[in-house]
Structure formats: structure tokens, C-alpha cells
Amino acid sequence: MFRLVQGQAPHTLHTLGTAAAVHWFKNICLILADNQIECTLWAKFGVQSPWQKAIADYGQTGLLRQIYWCRTGENPGLGESLKLDQSIGITPLLLEVNTHWQGENFFCFLSSQINLLILLGESPENPKVVNILQSFSPRVIGYFLNELKQSLVVADDLSVDLFTPEELNPSADLDLVNQLVQGMGPQLKNSSTAVPQSNSSAIANSFVVNLIRELGIPLTNIKTALQLLESLQQKKEARQRYLDLIKQNCDRQMSLITGLQELLTIEATTAPLESVQIADCTLSTIGIYQPIALEKSIILNSVVAENCPPVACTGADLRTILQRLLENALKFTNPGGRVQIKAYHQGPQVEIVVSDNGCGIAMADIPHLFDCFFQGQNALPETQGAGLGLTIVQSLVQRWGGKITVRSRPGQGSNFHVFLPVMVDHSLGHRFIVPS
Image 1 (spheres, helix red, strand yellow):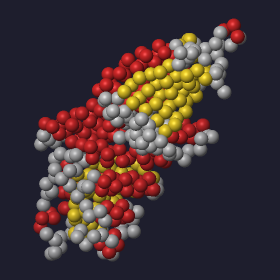
Image 2 (tube, rainbow, N blue to C red; image 1 turned 45 degrees about the horizontal axis):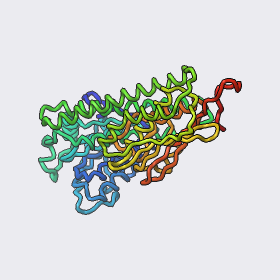
Image 3 (tube, rainbow, N blue to C red; image 1 turned 180 degrees about the vertical axis):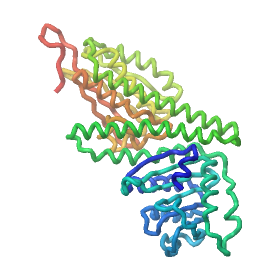
Image 4 (cartoon, rainbow, N blue to C red; image 1 turned 90 degrees about the vertical axis):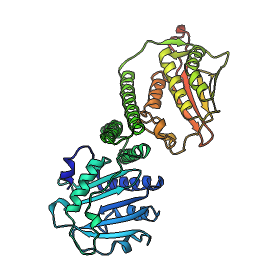
């Protein structure tokens, strides 16, 4: 069946290790439960399979109206094994002995908000790897259910309605689709965290894994939106939402490409040293973002100490640092909040503080803020960027012998402290003083 459905576009394919695939499937069920999705489920899985715990947890929410449990042989009662609520209807179904179903599991969630098909196939090359086919397309899901119903063993106690084609909702909740599509992200991300940082090859592999994930998410979102646009029954409003999703993810993809190019440029090039006035850069940057702040009813201002000396870097780099930090602060500050830039002279260096009283940062996220592609716990789908902004900031700061630190608490805002060396007289025999 996996190969048959694979020939029916559109769909999305993934490959994960068994443990990561199980964790991913649990995430999918949690997302459905969190969104209060009441559904009917067509499924094939073993009683002792790792997938059953996620289904059992979903069933205990009371959101599963009916389960059509398909099997190819005799098995113990599913209801007792899963400890489901007695209000949930469970219909055991027997499939004809057919090679289509060997070594495969499937889960087909049907609801008024969304339809989702997940096919799980064993990899012939590696038994510890699971091939995952995922589709939201009514046409693909309809094809799958039609093939499935033709494979059912007819029994006297089965309703004739079971063998009739399903009437699938041609549209889908766009926000929910986006959440389910991005449910793949954490597994690839978490699988890379165990890479030993002392091994440069492993670090490079970790970067590539994360890059593949970040390139894949927007493309998967775009592909899913195109799947849903396929249906001619879509209303004008729904079609516009899908077009907006495509545009949003194209923008994210472009942001990712631009960010990677910027990082490579920082690493590969050198820039002539300049004596940069903090006040000038701060005022020009504030001017750019003041309209955005006003639109969100956020107070945006700056305070630069009168004795603040010029710093040793380039004007372009300092403006980029301030712009990236301001974008971040404005993104996570609610209307009526405050964002501020302050600058002080601290001996051989200047301290620049970009502060806000926004949502703050989880303590567990702070050590990873400057990692490539990192998305914090507070990042909502509409606020997620490419995950490269703070990485670029740190690279620019370190380029000039500086450093950057963060202080934050959830609900109490964030303070980003940038330390840059003071520009000194060339007659001293060196260009600038590097902070300790």
C-alpha cells in the first residue's frame, strides 16, 4: 500500500529512526488533542506496537469518536488493551491476506477541520528506519480509503456504509495544517543535539542536518498549501489563506538563504576598520524601526552616555547588530511595551544594551540562542524566522573582538549586552583595545 499511495501525488515523504518516528507520531497526536480535534480513525497497528500509547493517550481525551481497527490476523481485543473510554466505538476489521499490508501501519484521521493520512513503512535496507508518507490531500486520502475498503473481508455484522466512499471535507484548518507539518521539526533537531562538540566533522554534520530540516519545513508548507489548493471546491477565502501560507514560507526560505549568505560573507571576508560613533548608528537605526514600534504601540528610544567613545568596527556591522537585536525585541514585545538601546563607556570597551519588557526567554533556551536555526520555546509560527539572526549578531560582534551576553526571565523581558572594543589612538602602537 505504501508504494501504491506513493504513486498518488501530492504527499510528503520522511525517513526517521524508529524512536524518532514514534516521538514524532506522539507529537502529531498531541497537536490534534491540543486543538480539540474530534475525529474518526482508520488504523492498522499491532497491540504491542510503539504507536498504541499515542493512540491510547489521544483516546483518553474523549476526542476519538470511532476507531476502525484493521488487522491481517487474529489479535486480542483492542479496547481492553488501549483502555479506551467506553463511549468510543471500536470496530475490528479483517484485511484480506495481501502483500500490500505486510510490514506497514497506517493512521487516517478524519474530521470536519482536517483530514490526515500517515503511512508507516519498514525500510527494506534498515529495520531500524521508518519511511513515513504524510498527506492532507482529500484526493490522496480518498484513494487510500477506497483501496482499503476493497481489501476488507466482508462479514455479516459489518454495515454496508463501511464499504461506501467517504465524503471528505475538501478544505482544512490552515493553522492546524501548519502545526502538523512542523511537527517533524523537533525530531531532526533533537537528534542533532547529541553530537559531540569536540569533533569538527560531527559539528559539520549537525549543521547539515539542521540546514536540511530548515530548508525542508518551508518547502513542505508550500507543498501542503498547493495540495489543498488543488481542490476546486475551495472557497475564495480559504484559497487566499493557502496563497498567504505559500508567500509566508517563500519569504522564510528567502530569509534563510539571505542569512546563510550573510554568515558565509562574514566568515570569508575582512572589512577595513572604522572609528564608529555609537550615537550616530543608534539614531539612524531607531529611525528605521520607529514606524514599526508606533504601529504596535511600543515605546522605542535610546540613551547614549555623553562620554561614550567611538568603537572599533565598521558602521555597517554595528548597524546590522542593532537592527537584528531591535527586530528581535520588537517581535517579542506586546503592544504597550518598551524597547530601549543604551550605551555606556566601560573602560577599554563600550557596553550596548538592547532591552525590552516582552515575553522573555526560557532559561533552557538561553545557552542555545546563538546556535544556527535555533527557535525558542516562545517562538510562535507567525514569529518564526530563519533562526539565523542572533547567530549573525554574535559572528559580527566576535569579528571585532567583542562579546555578547543575554539576561532574561520569562515574562520579564530580555537584555542583550554587546561589548565592543573602544577605538584608540594609532600612536599607541595598536588599533584598538580588546576587552578581557
